[in-house]
Length: 149
Image (cartoon, rainbow, N blue to C red; front, side):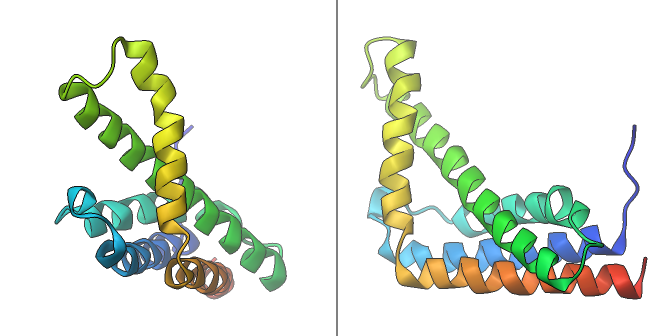
């Protein structure tokens, strides 16, 4: 079954793309040189747009408080998928450098890399952007759903 676009999904995509881009821009200067990439911010914005459309855009219609809680959940999903994407990328880079003995070692090391990236991402600026952005994004989606059902 194909989903219909709604105003809440569009607003969710826009808001969480902005949250992803802002969080990535805040994190980028603190990353070691080998993790910096010019497409770091756009990829996180794209992940945010997908999360805003697929997760937050569906979680409206139950009131402002519930939407803001869903916004925090969506920000958490944004962080999770960004960590997964960049952990897999790092694992592939390390695999190409022949750092693993077999594919199982590479796949199990993704969890270690993900934990390392999570620790790097837990700087106050990023956490504040995710929390405040999630709350505002949830509110904006609920208001969009009320204005343009």
